[in-house]
Length: 281
Image (cartoon, one colour):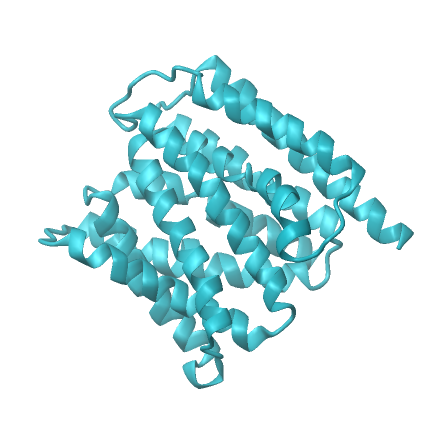
Protein backbone atom coordinates (compact mmCIF):
# COMPACT_ATOMS: atom_id res chain seq x y z
CA UNK A 1 0.00 0.00 0.00
CA UNK A 2 2.78 2.46 0.90
CA UNK A 3 4.59 2.29 -2.49
CA UNK A 4 1.31 2.88 -4.33
CA UNK A 5 0.57 5.82 -2.06
CA UNK A 6 4.04 7.19 -2.83
CA UNK A 7 3.28 7.11 -6.56
CA UNK A 8 -0.12 8.72 -6.02
CA UNK A 9 1.50 11.50 -3.98
CA UNK A 10 4.16 11.95 -6.69
CA UNK A 11 1.49 12.30 -9.38
CA UNK A 12 -0.42 14.80 -7.23
CA UNK A 13 2.71 16.88 -6.63
CA UNK A 14 3.72 16.83 -10.30
CA UNK A 15 0.20 17.92 -11.26
CA UNK A 16 0.46 21.16 -9.28
CA UNK A 17 3.18 22.50 -11.60
CA UNK A 18 0.84 24.08 -14.13
CA UNK A 19 -1.21 25.98 -11.56
CA UNK A 20 1.78 27.22 -9.56
CA UNK A 21 3.72 28.30 -12.67
CA UNK A 22 0.75 30.46 -13.67
CA UNK A 23 0.49 31.81 -10.11
CA UNK A 24 3.91 33.48 -10.36
CA UNK A 25 3.93 36.92 -11.98
CA UNK A 26 7.42 36.17 -13.32
CA UNK A 27 7.79 35.38 -17.02
CA UNK A 28 8.48 31.88 -18.31
CA UNK A 29 12.27 32.23 -18.43
CA UNK A 30 12.44 33.62 -14.91
CA UNK A 31 10.28 30.82 -13.51
CA UNK A 32 12.18 28.13 -15.43
CA UNK A 33 15.60 29.47 -14.48
CA UNK A 34 14.93 30.08 -10.80
CA UNK A 35 13.05 26.80 -10.40
CA UNK A 36 15.99 24.90 -11.85
CA UNK A 37 18.50 26.67 -9.60
CA UNK A 38 16.50 25.56 -6.58
CA UNK A 39 16.03 22.01 -7.95
CA UNK A 40 19.74 21.67 -8.79
CA UNK A 41 20.70 22.59 -5.22
CA UNK A 42 18.07 20.20 -3.85
CA UNK A 43 19.30 17.25 -5.92
CA UNK A 44 22.95 18.09 -5.21
CA UNK A 45 22.19 17.92 -1.48
CA UNK A 46 20.12 14.73 -1.71
CA UNK A 47 22.43 12.75 -3.97
CA UNK A 48 25.70 14.29 -2.74
CA UNK A 49 27.50 15.87 -5.64
CA UNK A 50 30.63 13.79 -5.05
CA UNK A 51 28.71 10.58 -5.77
CA UNK A 52 26.95 11.83 -8.91
CA UNK A 53 28.64 10.91 -12.18
CA UNK A 54 29.21 13.87 -14.48
CA UNK A 55 30.05 12.28 -17.82
CA UNK A 56 29.23 13.12 -21.42
CA UNK A 57 26.43 10.55 -21.21
CA UNK A 58 24.83 12.13 -18.13
CA UNK A 59 25.33 15.54 -19.76
CA UNK A 60 23.48 14.40 -22.91
CA UNK A 61 20.63 13.04 -20.79
CA UNK A 62 20.65 16.26 -18.77
CA UNK A 63 20.35 18.35 -21.94
CA UNK A 64 17.20 16.46 -22.97
CA UNK A 65 15.78 16.88 -19.46
CA UNK A 66 16.58 20.61 -19.50
CA UNK A 67 14.77 21.07 -22.82
CA UNK A 68 11.74 19.25 -21.40
CA UNK A 69 11.58 21.50 -18.33
CA UNK A 70 12.04 24.71 -20.33
CA UNK A 71 9.47 23.68 -22.92
CA UNK A 72 6.86 22.86 -20.28
CA UNK A 73 7.20 26.20 -18.47
CA UNK A 74 7.12 28.27 -21.67
CA UNK A 75 4.12 26.33 -23.02
CA UNK A 76 2.32 26.61 -19.68
CA UNK A 77 2.55 30.40 -19.80
CA UNK A 78 0.98 30.46 -23.28
CA UNK A 79 -1.67 27.72 -23.32
CA UNK A 80 -3.80 25.91 -20.75
CA UNK A 81 -2.15 23.80 -18.07
CA UNK A 82 -4.16 20.82 -19.32
CA UNK A 83 -2.84 21.13 -22.86
CA UNK A 84 0.74 21.59 -21.66
CA UNK A 85 0.81 18.32 -19.74
CA UNK A 86 -1.38 16.22 -22.07
CA UNK A 87 0.77 17.17 -25.06
CA UNK A 88 3.86 16.13 -23.10
CA UNK A 89 2.22 12.70 -22.83
CA UNK A 90 2.55 12.30 -26.61
CA UNK A 91 6.11 11.13 -25.86
CA UNK A 92 5.27 7.41 -26.42
CA UNK A 93 4.67 8.21 -30.10
CA UNK A 94 8.23 9.43 -30.52
CA UNK A 95 9.67 6.71 -28.28
CA UNK A 96 8.00 4.02 -30.40
CA UNK A 97 9.41 5.58 -33.57
CA UNK A 98 12.92 6.32 -32.26
CA UNK A 99 13.74 3.48 -29.83
CA UNK A 100 14.37 0.84 -32.55
CA UNK A 101 16.86 3.15 -34.29
CA UNK A 102 18.56 4.72 -31.29
CA UNK A 103 18.51 1.84 -28.80
CA UNK A 104 18.02 -1.18 -31.03
CA UNK A 105 14.75 -2.06 -29.30
CA UNK A 106 12.14 -4.17 -31.06
CA UNK A 107 9.00 -2.38 -32.15
CA UNK A 108 5.95 -4.17 -30.76
CA UNK A 109 2.64 -4.71 -32.51
CA UNK A 110 0.65 -2.60 -30.06
CA UNK A 111 3.03 0.32 -30.72
CA UNK A 112 1.27 0.84 -34.08
CA UNK A 113 -2.06 1.33 -32.29
CA UNK A 114 -0.39 3.69 -29.80
CA UNK A 115 1.17 5.76 -32.59
CA UNK A 116 -2.13 6.10 -34.45
CA UNK A 117 -4.05 7.12 -31.32
CA UNK A 118 -1.46 9.70 -30.29
CA UNK A 119 -1.06 11.07 -33.83
CA UNK A 120 -4.82 11.66 -34.10
CA UNK A 121 -4.88 13.14 -30.59
CA UNK A 122 -1.97 15.44 -31.45
CA UNK A 123 -3.73 16.61 -34.61
CA UNK A 124 -6.86 17.41 -32.61
CA UNK A 125 -4.82 19.52 -30.19
CA UNK A 126 -3.13 21.48 -32.96
CA UNK A 127 -6.34 22.24 -34.90
CA UNK A 128 -8.55 22.52 -31.83
CA UNK A 129 -8.94 26.30 -31.83
CA UNK A 130 -8.74 26.72 -28.05
CA UNK A 131 -10.13 30.02 -26.75
CA UNK A 132 -7.76 32.79 -25.68
CA UNK A 133 -7.82 33.16 -21.89
CA UNK A 134 -6.09 35.45 -19.41
CA UNK A 135 -3.99 32.49 -18.28
CA UNK A 136 -3.60 31.11 -21.83
CA UNK A 137 -2.92 34.17 -24.03
CA UNK A 138 -1.54 32.33 -27.08
CA UNK A 139 -2.87 28.76 -27.15
CA UNK A 140 -1.78 28.11 -30.76
CA UNK A 141 1.89 28.85 -30.05
CA UNK A 142 1.66 27.25 -26.60
CA UNK A 143 0.23 24.03 -28.02
CA UNK A 144 2.97 23.90 -30.66
CA UNK A 145 5.68 24.31 -28.02
CA UNK A 146 4.00 21.71 -25.80
CA UNK A 147 3.90 19.29 -28.73
CA UNK A 148 7.64 19.81 -29.23
CA UNK A 149 8.04 19.23 -25.50
CA UNK A 150 6.57 15.77 -26.00
CA UNK A 151 9.54 15.06 -28.27
CA UNK A 152 11.98 16.44 -25.68
CA UNK A 153 10.39 14.23 -23.02
CA UNK A 154 10.73 11.24 -25.33
CA UNK A 155 14.46 11.94 -25.67
CA UNK A 156 14.64 12.20 -21.88
CA UNK A 157 13.00 8.78 -21.48
CA UNK A 158 15.27 7.30 -24.14
CA UNK A 159 18.33 8.75 -22.43
CA UNK A 160 17.28 7.21 -19.11
CA UNK A 161 17.10 3.80 -20.80
CA UNK A 162 20.44 4.53 -22.46
CA UNK A 163 22.05 5.15 -19.04
CA UNK A 164 20.63 1.85 -17.80
CA UNK A 165 20.56 1.33 -14.05
CA UNK A 166 23.55 3.56 -13.30
CA UNK A 167 22.15 5.59 -10.40
CA UNK A 168 25.20 7.86 -10.23
CA UNK A 169 24.83 8.85 -13.86
CA UNK A 170 21.08 9.34 -13.41
CA UNK A 171 21.78 11.62 -10.46
CA UNK A 172 24.33 13.49 -12.56
CA UNK A 173 21.79 13.94 -15.35
CA UNK A 174 19.23 15.40 -12.93
CA UNK A 175 21.70 17.90 -11.51
CA UNK A 176 23.17 18.82 -14.90
CA UNK A 177 19.71 19.11 -16.47
CA UNK A 178 18.68 21.73 -13.95
CA UNK A 179 22.03 23.53 -14.27
CA UNK A 180 21.62 23.64 -18.07
CA UNK A 181 18.03 24.91 -17.78
CA UNK A 182 19.13 27.66 -15.40
CA UNK A 183 22.05 28.63 -17.66
CA UNK A 184 19.86 28.86 -20.78
CA UNK A 185 17.23 30.89 -18.93
CA UNK A 186 19.65 33.31 -17.26
CA UNK A 187 20.28 35.68 -20.21
CA UNK A 188 16.52 36.08 -20.73
CA UNK A 189 15.54 36.27 -17.07
CA UNK A 190 16.95 39.61 -15.98
CA UNK A 191 15.98 41.94 -14.47
CA UNK A 192 14.02 39.94 -11.92
CA UNK A 193 11.45 41.70 -9.76
CA UNK A 194 10.12 38.96 -7.52
CA UNK A 195 7.56 39.44 -4.79
CA UNK A 196 6.86 37.09 -1.86
CA UNK A 197 4.36 35.05 -3.88
CA UNK A 198 6.88 34.62 -6.70
CA UNK A 199 9.62 33.47 -4.32
CA UNK A 200 7.26 31.03 -2.61
CA UNK A 201 6.12 29.67 -5.99
CA UNK A 202 9.69 29.12 -7.23
CA UNK A 203 10.77 27.43 -3.99
CA UNK A 204 7.74 25.16 -4.10
CA UNK A 205 8.33 24.25 -7.74
CA UNK A 206 12.01 23.48 -7.26
CA UNK A 207 11.86 21.62 -3.95
CA UNK A 208 8.41 20.03 -3.88
CA UNK A 209 7.02 19.82 -7.42
CA UNK A 210 10.30 18.61 -8.94
CA UNK A 211 12.51 17.38 -6.08
CA UNK A 212 10.21 15.66 -3.59
CA UNK A 213 7.90 14.35 -6.32
CA UNK A 214 10.87 12.71 -8.03
CA UNK A 215 11.95 11.04 -4.76
CA UNK A 216 8.44 9.67 -4.24
CA UNK A 217 8.40 8.40 -7.83
CA UNK A 218 11.69 6.52 -7.55
CA UNK A 219 10.74 5.07 -4.16
CA UNK A 220 7.37 3.80 -5.39
CA UNK A 221 8.68 2.48 -8.71
CA UNK A 222 11.01 0.06 -6.90
CA UNK A 223 8.10 -2.01 -5.52
CA UNK A 224 5.14 -1.46 -7.85
CA UNK A 225 4.77 -3.29 -11.19
CA UNK A 226 5.47 -1.03 -14.15
CA UNK A 227 1.93 -1.20 -15.57
CA UNK A 228 0.32 -0.29 -12.26
CA UNK A 229 2.89 2.46 -11.68
CA UNK A 230 2.24 3.92 -15.14
CA UNK A 231 -1.50 4.00 -14.57
CA UNK A 232 -1.11 5.59 -11.13
CA UNK A 233 1.12 8.30 -12.61
CA UNK A 234 -1.60 9.04 -15.20
CA UNK A 235 -3.27 10.87 -12.34
CA UNK A 236 -0.87 13.74 -13.10
CA UNK A 237 -2.44 15.12 -16.31
CA UNK A 238 -5.98 14.52 -15.04
CA UNK A 239 -5.34 16.31 -11.74
CA UNK A 240 -3.48 19.10 -13.54
CA UNK A 241 -6.49 19.75 -15.76
CA UNK A 242 -8.90 19.67 -12.81
CA UNK A 243 -6.75 22.03 -10.74
CA UNK A 244 -6.42 24.52 -13.61
CA UNK A 245 -10.20 24.47 -14.09
CA UNK A 246 -10.89 24.94 -10.36
CA UNK A 247 -8.30 27.68 -9.81
CA UNK A 248 -8.35 29.60 -13.10
CA UNK A 249 -11.47 28.40 -14.87
CA UNK A 250 -9.33 27.05 -17.71
CA UNK A 251 -11.28 24.77 -20.00
CA UNK A 252 -9.71 23.61 -23.28
CA UNK A 253 -11.80 23.43 -26.45
CA UNK A 254 -13.79 20.32 -27.37
CA UNK A 255 -11.17 19.14 -29.89
CA UNK A 256 -8.39 19.40 -27.30
CA UNK A 257 -10.45 17.47 -24.77
CA UNK A 258 -10.99 14.74 -27.38
CA UNK A 259 -7.26 14.78 -28.16
CA UNK A 260 -6.42 14.47 -24.47
CA UNK A 261 -8.73 11.47 -24.19
CA UNK A 262 -6.98 9.72 -27.07
CA UNK A 263 -3.56 10.42 -25.56
CA UNK A 264 -4.69 8.90 -22.25
CA UNK A 265 -6.09 5.81 -23.99
CA UNK A 266 -2.82 5.46 -25.89
CA UNK A 267 -0.82 5.66 -22.66
CA UNK A 268 -2.88 2.85 -21.12
CA UNK A 269 -2.56 0.71 -24.28
CA UNK A 270 1.20 1.27 -24.31
CA UNK A 271 1.64 0.39 -20.62
CA UNK A 272 -0.57 -2.69 -20.71
CA UNK A 273 0.93 -3.92 -23.99
CA UNK A 274 4.49 -3.55 -22.70
CA UNK A 275 3.54 -5.36 -19.48
CA UNK A 276 2.10 -8.34 -21.41
CA UNK A 277 5.24 -8.56 -23.55
CA UNK A 278 7.47 -8.57 -20.44
CA UNK A 279 5.39 -11.38 -18.90
CA UNK A 280 5.79 -13.51 -22.07
CA UNK A 281 9.52 -12.82 -22.12
